Length: 151
Image 1 (tube, helix red, strand yellow):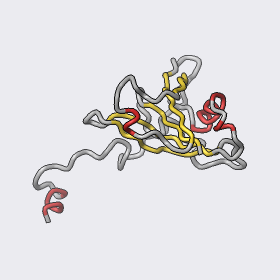
Image 2 (tube, helix red, strand yellow):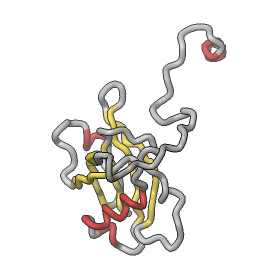
Image 3 (cartoon, one colour):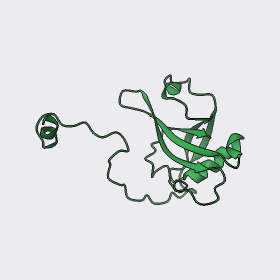
């Protein structure tokens, strides 16, 4: 009953939904002119066998050691990022490797959240559904980390 009253305007208002959840779809962003737009620094942390835990990011300055820094744009898609990770990670070059991507960012209390956003195959025989998802489509914000699990 109390939940119904809150939804109908009575009582305290409900808190806003978590970032990226139940938000109206954003209009498709125009492609970035990569000749005129400065790239952003994307801090990528790779791990074989699974994602890092949120506790691995808990202390600023003591992030996981397996970091790759990539300069890219918000219109970069997961296929592009897969190819960049393959350049630095031997495990990601395996023909049957699967890469799982997650954004890592602080919540409103300063604790980190690891949110999975998509998967790609190292060498896809056919196009994967997440290959064409861009950082902007996935609600990436400058300053977020990218955690890549390699299976």
